[in-house]
Length: 88
Image (cartoon, rainbow, N blue to C red):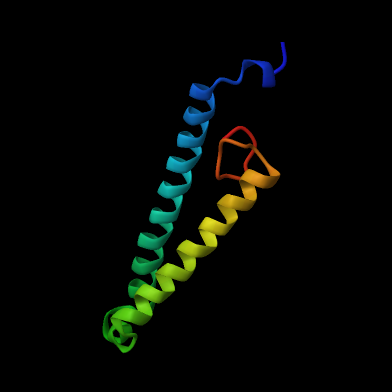
C-alpha cells in the first residue's frame, strides 16, 4: 500500500500541524537568538548605539530568513519538517 492511499484528513492535518509548529519554533528561536546576539556582539558599552528598532529589525531579518529557509526545506526536502537535515 502506498503512502498516498493511507492519507486521511486527520493525517494531513497532523503533518501540517507538525510542520507548522516546527517552523514557528525555529523562527521564534532565531529571532530571540539574533536579538541577543546583536546585544552581545555590540558589547556592553556600544550596544546602545543601535536603536531598539534597529536591533528588532536585525532580529526580524534573521527570523524572515529562517522562515524562508523552512519553506524551501519543505519544498525540497522532508515534507513534514522545516529542516534541510534528512530524517528531521
